[in-house]
Image (cartoon, rainbow, N blue to C red; front, side, top):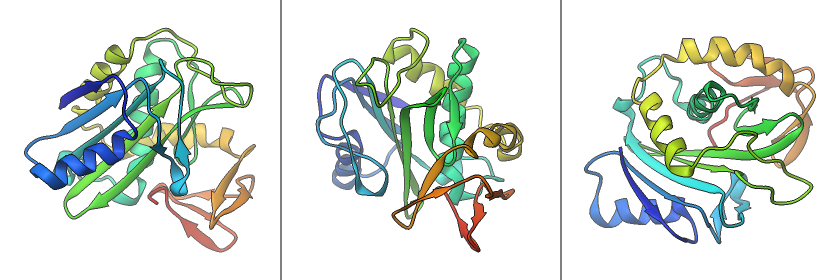
Length: 211
């Protein structure tokens, strides 16, 4: 994975997609910054943070993912791999279905994933510093560079979905105390059923993490 670090950018996700559109895909690529001024969040929301937090987007071919991964649950997969990396360093971070990072009851980041032909794009934002009372921040000290390096080393191992899901299934119980946005509506996950493909069944509807 080639990593390009930029001091400031409007959106790592937009920059990356424009770069691939202009020059084509030649190898897995990551664009990262500690200051994003017009980031893209879930459902078209903006994701803007203060200087010192971590924002990065990467692109790779679907063939670089484990064969048993349901593509619609790629956000869970990418998020949980980062969760494992940070947990190994002592963090109490956990993943709320489908793609939000939490410390206790405070959101500290999130993931968006999209697919274009045989390419898959993933964008991640993570608060390394406090940004206000509404949100939390990572509970360990790691530099953006060390997080990125450790993350892509772990991602390159292509951990099987069944291995990731077996751990996420246990952690999903924490999500039951929260809500998720489904069809632009906040819906409680208390009675949701987590399926083996990473989707949830709720209100007679099957919902995946891929937006």
